[in-house]
Length: 328
Image 1 (cartoon, rainbow, N blue to C red):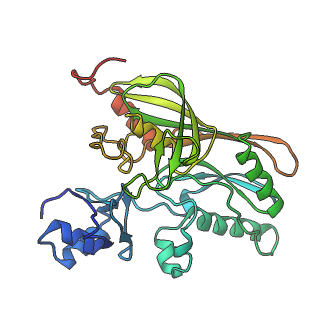
Image 2 (image 1 turned 135 degrees about the horizontal axis):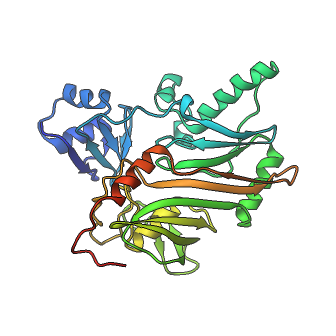
């Protein structure tokens, strides 16, 4: 069986991950499919899959990579940037869910620990840390916002209901600062992107439309930082914070983020090819600022690109630009 392989799940092939792979790959035995899974060579939508129980739906992209993917992030990859009795700010590694889907909360502990969510890892880290200080149960983590699984960077959780309410109010009022870095295809001038998000654009993916009132408002302020051959490093500041907002708006504008296997253009049009060879989605939550919901002290946190993305940026910046692509 030749590798690498890449398939898009259809209505007819949807189901458990190994079943989907075998339906698309043809003559592939169950034992060979499991070896790919156990060898960390299967990715779903660009993310390592090591869970045989993972179910794929129409539109999910399944790949068998030539070489093993890095092991899934663990508790050791999570870094606490700030913590008090009301809030905790954390550096989320790429490849880790912010919050586990409600339907998956009842999974057995062993299954969860294969690919833990940030909430689960952080809960363990805080419990171990605070047990050394005072022998009592750590406070519950309360969600305020989330960032995509493939995205790295800064996230805040509340630890009390008043703190959660205060932070959510700031996010809703757009007074919290949320700044991202990304690398995209082509070149974009500084501008504000405005569209309205719908839950299903026609292929079971969220999408943007230009009809006010028919979806959730999405507003992103983008500025180019530097040209990287055929690509551009961009700064994106969120005014609203919808699911996949930056990815959707840039892709539908014709400039998808490097490494994004989910959003590659407008629905109904051929997907824009990705020749960047990005190791993952090139998107990073680089800055988060808010007023402490209890003390009102202004807090701001910044993180530069992580090592994997710095290496990728060096590679694309030294790669010759394609001769048939127009200059900006």
